[in-house]
Amino acid sequence: MIPQPTAQQALADETFLLEADATIGLDDPSAQLITDRFAAQLRRSTGYALPVQDGTGTITLSTSGPESLGDEGYELRADASGVTVIAATAEGLFRGVTTLRQLLPAKAEADTAQDGPWEIAGTTISDSPRYEYRGVMLDVTRHFFTVEQVKKFIDVVSQYKLNRLHLHLSDDQGWRIQVDSWPRLTEYGGSLQVGGGAGGYYTKAEYADLVQYAAEHYITVVPEIDTPGHTNAALASYAELNKGDQAPDLYTETEVGFSSFAIDKDVTYEFLDDVFREVAEQTPGELLHLGGDEAHSTPHSEYLDFVPKAAELVLKHGKRVMGWHEIADGPLPAGTVVQYWGTEDPKAQVLAQKAVEQGATLVLSPANRAYLDMKYDAETPLGLDWAGLVSVEQSYSWNPATLVPGVPASAIIGVEAPLWTETLDDLEKVEFMVFPRLPGIAELGWSQESALDWTAYRERLAEQGPRWEVLGVNFYRAPEMDWR
Ligand code: TNX
Image (cartoon, rainbow, N blue to C red; front, side):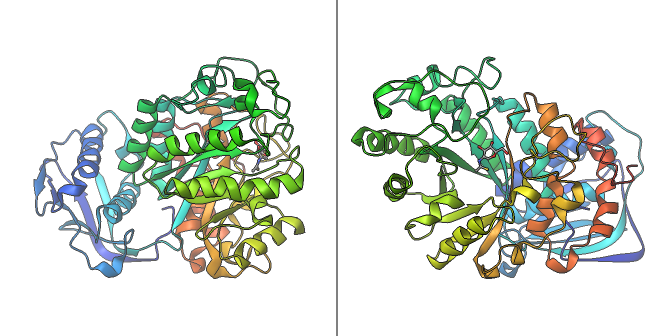
């Protein structure tokens, strides 16, 4: 199972067997949708009727648990008489159901009827997360991914108890979210992608659908509008955002660090006010990510002027600021979340320390560990290698609490694995880079420090292979594992 639960005990001599007359009981209408989806999946694979009823059933899902379980905690028991999953909230119940799905045979994930038996070895589990923020980032700018593709991604990543989907929505190569007040951003700025092919963007309705679908999987979307660099698509769409009022061409290559908003123009802030307002209106989550990375063509003094002004506009629209660690070189408003993407670079570490000294919290995405676009080894046909080669073991074997020297464990609110898509033009390629590394980052975010052990993890990870086969997920059969 991944992530490893806080506590699990085997019940010797007890086995749960799901049979044709089984029922699913639920005592909380707010968990109806997740229960119906779980039941529907089991009906497809088992061929059983599995009616969902009020109260208890052969499988009982309940939110009558004590508040001490927290928002995401749950308890599970499987024995010869049935299965119970008890949480204090629908979210906790959802996390518990992801565990239950992993306890069932992999073929329970199939979308056609399979032969049983549908057994679970008797067990009790008590579980809750180590960190509140457990994220994955998808770069939909370098290559665009449709709502349907992102939904399939959500289906799989939510099974590992991740609870944030950071969407990188604007960059040099494309603007991917509709903004009514600046329509050329998508009409023109979203038209291409890396390599020169057709790009794309999310209409407001599509974006709302995505946010809703993520929420139904207890995943909060964190939208990123990258500023003041990584902005060629916007600069190409509106000449007035440029220093010399000259719009550059659209850009479909993969260099970074050449674009910048005009920091000293009022229109830049009028633009961001509008963009952040429209994006914030569509964001139920509390964070809005303003980027801030690799602004190599923004003079540093101007960068330091810019970030507080942009941050102010995020706050104006009711959101907390999130940004890449470069933003910590200047003042940060209260409640800022800084995303660390350094390796062992002391400059990045100093910025992380500066962030914490200002009261910010940190999400860790160390590029030499958590970047899903780094090649596994020298032979990997996709991805980049500027942060090194990142094997499955390398991506798993680190401790968030002690990663950055001089940063106290209390400042870390979680981890995130970013996937940049310069070299990834379809979902199969995305999956190849994400699996099998992402479950390891999910485990670092969820499981207690005492549970983290590569040798044991390696065995558990190999067990996910058959699940991905059933789900049609194109994972990399890393030679580090003995795949089943
Ligand atoms: C650096 S990491 C970037 C991205 C690239 C990525 C490729 C960061 C905040 N910015 O613009 O896509 O490297 O690995």
